[in-house]
Length: 117
Image 1 (spheres, rainbow, N blue to C red):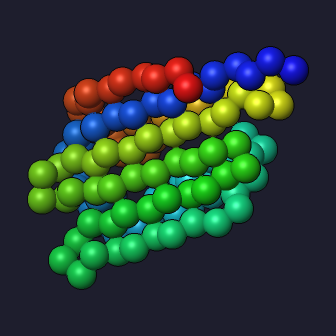
Image 2 (image 1 turned 180 degrees about the horizontal axis):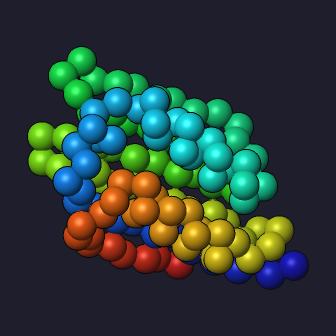
C-alpha cells in the first residue's frame, strides 16, 4: 500500500463569543461529539484551563490529532485538525470537523492554512 498524505488544517479564528474561549467545558462536550460522530478513536487528551481564563487542549487520535489554544483577551483561538489517510481518505472528515469548529465558535474572521503531509 502506498502512503497517501493526509490533510492538516490550521486556523486562527476570531469570535465575539468570548465566553466560549474562557473555559473548556463546552469545548470538551463539542469535540467529544465530533470525534464520536465521525467514528474517530481518541487515545488520550490533555486539557488545561488557565486561572484567568482561556484553555488549551490536545486530543490524540489513532488517526492523528486535534488541538486548540484560546486567548479570550484577544477574542481568538488557534486550532488544528490533522487526520492521516493511512487506512482511508479522511480529507472530508478533516474539513467537516474544522467547519464545525468555526460554527461552534461563531467565527467572525479567520486566517487558515492547509498542508498535505
